[in-house]
Amino acid sequence: MELTNTRQLLTLREACKWASSFLGRNINESNISYLIQYGKVKKYGENGSTQIDAHDLKDYYRSFNGKREVEWKKKLGNDLNWSLSFDNLREKDTTKHIHKLHPYKGKFIPQLVEYFIDNHTDDFKQKAFFKKGDIILDPFSGSGTTLVQANELGIHSIGIDISRFNCMITDTKLLDYDLDLLIKEIKNINLAIAKFEADGKIEEFERELFIELVKFNNGNFPSPDFKRKIYKREINENEYSAKKEKEFLNIYNKLVAKYKIELKQEKNKTFLDKWYIKNVRKEIDFAFNQIKKIKDKKNKRVLAVILSRTIRSCRATTHSDLATLKEPQITTYYCWKHKKICKPLFSIKYWFDRYANDTIARVKEFQRLKNGAHWASITGDSRTVDITNEIKSRNKEFYKLLEKQKIQGIFSSPPYVGQIDYHEQHAYAYDLFGFERKDELEIGPLYKGQGLEAKKSYIEDISQVLLNSKKYLSDNFDVFLVANDKWNLYPQIAEKTGMKIVNQFKRPVLNRTERNKNPYSEIIFHFKKI
Image (cartoon, rainbow, N blue to C red; front, top):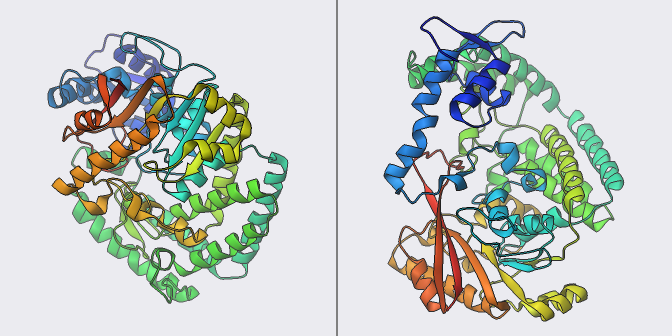
């Protein structure tokens, strides 16, 4: 399409076609709608006849998308393998089926795992390293991404993690369920929560607060016009938002007083005490007691994970600080993510219902994809765990297979030095379920920092994991480790473990949880036996 200086209005469908041609990759209507919603391009037309100017679209893509690869390579090096960015994928693709069962910070996308463990080859991956029927190990299994993808490909898998809750998430993803019974149990709990809430004042309070919020936001933060004004720097967001935040706070405080809403809990000792408004905490305890009554152990487990996912979303924090908590938020506030006044949560009912239905859909989808492979999720220390005995005690058939052919290799993403406290990110779940925390056994935790001693300890700990894992690997193993190795620690780890790095795949990481959007890369190290 040849563009002139005159306005050229396109429908969403026409815009998709034009953008796909311009960028050389598929662009769908949700991509274009996102640009409109967040004020990146101006909306024309009303009453369902949404149109945008092709010039605006061209300007946007020229200012960002087309330049990103060039700019990132300038900063990160020309060895950056852009094909491993998976920038053509939508969030729904990278969180497909069971992978979005529960949030997990530091998780790699399933397409990255699939790329290295499936049987395809290309210009970068010139041979297949795993095949159906092989056994693969992830000694830092986290929420089980490697195990899930292996199962889908018919590859047997073993995951190990020091966190009991991480293993609980993994188990929940891979178990088989009586779905009819599970749906019935969910319905019963939803009804119980609704009745529990109806007995209080929260429902009426929330209804009136919602009406006031909609009226205030429509008048003061009209979407997408307000977002576009920010994008075009036609408004001082800091000054304007602070003024409007204060205005609505007066309305909020009057409603809290009217309905006699108790915001703070009496105690402030545990995570559940500190980070939840009082009514939310009451509903959490009530729902968990309902789940405890369920007889089917698998259903009880998945419902517990649904509740955990629910309470993570119901923490008293701003939407911008969900990944890294700062201070409890018990009042309305200007939301930097949504560009309007938002509120804390006063009930779990909506989120439990939403996540329960989402879980059912994801479980159904994944159960159709399962390939009959064995799997095991082991809660333990990968530096010392006896894998053979663990499998023997769980699955005799899997044990015989392991003894016969051993483990073909590893695909894993070890913790990075001084970035995440893995137990702390799920503190709410440990409080709720009463699980024992083993923070002191984490490798490279945030609380130990990134100093010289932390790096030395990290090298030693990762080496011990690999040395222990080698006992169970076949002679011709392939080990793939995903790491952001800015201190060049992995060559030392290879040397200490009697392995060599035979290849490196450097990939850009485009979608990060944190607000920091600076160019960032990680390396997939390929280790072999010397």
